[in-house]
Length: 295
Image (cartoon, rainbow, N blue to C red; front, side, top):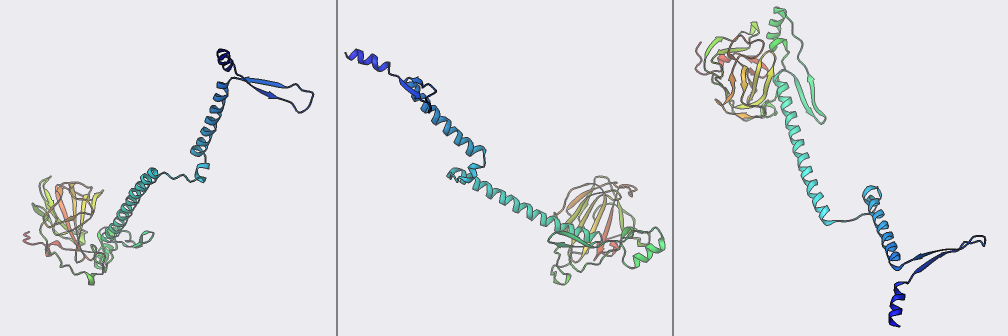
């Protein structure tokens, strides 16, 4: 008898009867074994769970249901901190570049101010004229090279403070920026606003005084050029270099190498460095500021 009951349990079946509402149809039945019922239930649960997870992961529904995960919150919080630091650093670099842009424009004869929206130019140099008498007239009025109308800034190019508030001592007189022979002096009437020092190609070009590099790059006429800004409203120019050793916004000491002597630029006639000194936006004769200068 127990054996018969055991075999009977193995043959247990479940019938699912589908009865139509009207009497016209016939009832239908589906027979399931126990394991099939269990498999159907488990499969149904798995499909439901999978569908819910898919909705949360691939649809906006997941945004409506807040699910906190301590590990994810910690990781994303660290990433947000790093991104915030990067943005802050980029903003500081942008402000620094804008400040040097203002300094460089002042060195080239433009009046520019730093505003909330960027650098605004409030005055531009006038165009050049080939008439010698006009150039002489512009020179008497304080015109710059190539006929640029040079402004006379009332602030220090390095600190961007009014000149009356700058307490740093003037670092001039200066020293010759390179070893060699002076082949041409300051000739404002011929639009030659500096001195030419002929030397060996590749020899060092040194800073004539302590200052900040406000420009170091290539120009078609002057080749590789460096502009230093000094306290007291002074600027020094070093033109026609073979290559550059310093870039903006570096700070250099007197005698520190900033470039290699060369013959670059369309206006260069041989290996030399063209050296200029500007005071408050006006070119001046370097011979009046250089120590131990012998022509």
